Image (cartoon, rainbow, N blue to C red; front, side):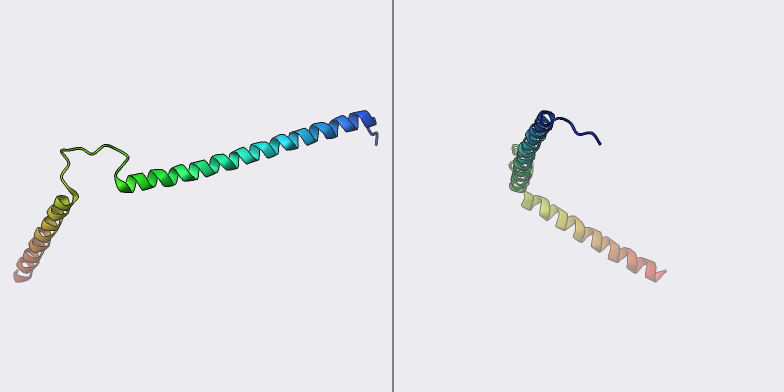
Length: 91
């Protein structure tokens, strides 16, 4: 099997080393970018849970009022279900 001259072999090794160094650099940059993405994702989630992603709408009702309305609607629904159950048993 023929082998290239030593000068060509040296050049091939130099180029391969250069490409490996470039690949290592790219890998490090990708890792840094992934870390930034992870931090950004955590930051966005934290802001979302604190309600800081969008400005507060002054027309929105407070959460406690909404919860009271939901509880009242649930109680009314349960009461109607009990009445309907009693009526169906009497038939």
